[in-house]
Length: 132
Image 1 (cartoon, rainbow, N blue to C red):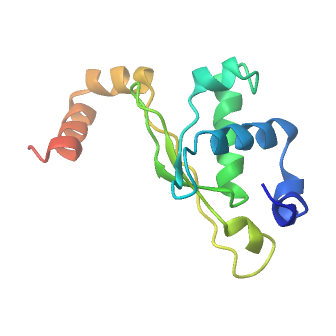
Image 2: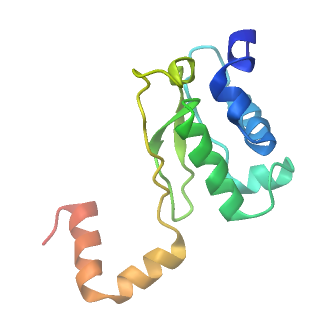
């Protein structure tokens, strides 16, 4: 994290827990060429970033909202959400800021409920496997 980021409008707008989580997302980078990062809820709890899944979802949503991360895969069903480190934050507050939305992945509860409904089950199967 550099000085421009730390003094940016986007970074200063973040809650403290979100700033801490961002540092741990960056900790996932193994080299300067890696731009995809992951932080699981279990890791966030172990690092004392947050203690609830709902808070963790708010943190990820905030990092996307302010342009520090771009969502690549929402994860779910024991697969982590994958993000790309973004520089959109440097345009935050300007007219040309590109607004992206974070869409959480499917939890096992959602999946269980959806698979119990024949119509939803068929849509999930079709979307995943292209089967009618």
